[in-house]
Length: 60
Figure (cartoon, rainbow, N blue to C red):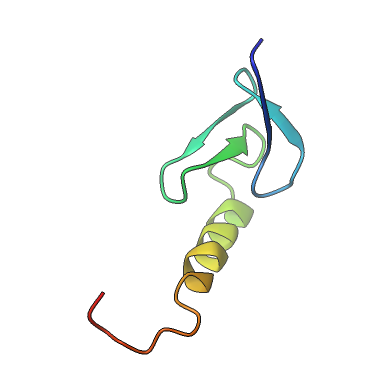
């Protein structure tokens, strides 16, 4: 059991390699309980939306 020392980006519970996987959209660990859930999709959108805060240029 490898401890990643990480938390699920959705529920923030500790995760390890046995009870989690990597979310391919935000490249962060997600626990098996949150994986493919509505909350996961909402959190993905929230994190991706925050990346554009303050940007005006549409060239990216």
